[in-house]
Image 1 (cartoon, helix red, strand yellow):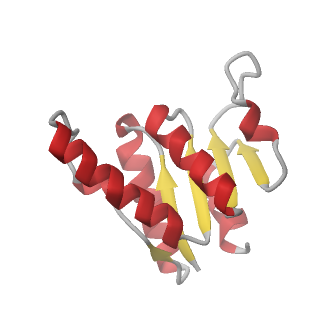
Image 2 (spheres, rainbow, N blue to C red; image 1 turned 60 degrees about the horizontal axis):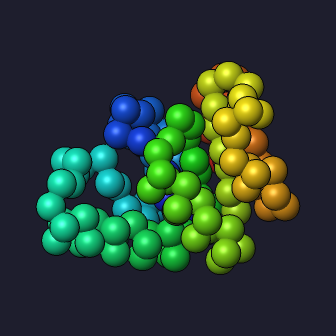
Image 3 (cartoon, rainbow, N blue to C red; image 1 turned 180 degrees about the vertical axis):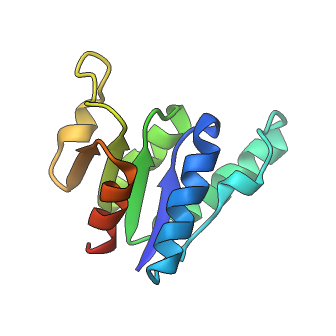
Length: 125
């Protein structure tokens, strides 16, 4: 099974941790954006955006780790449009006043609480 993790730069360590755990379970990571620096030049933004779009297309499972920024939510939309399995993790209950409506559509599994429990759920998908 191939996966992609969408999240914000502030969650780089958590993204790397989850990715490593899934790789150990036999999953394949379609793209590790955490190896990049934050892009600020149009050419780099375009290049990274293309890599991320391709990674979402190639994955079987998209994992969204909250809190996440606007690019992560674009990736969520792409994954929804492609009919991918989607798992959303939040350490605490998702705040309904700031939640996206797309967190609650068919095909999206939400989880809040212990990160290890979340990884276990993805691992049996």
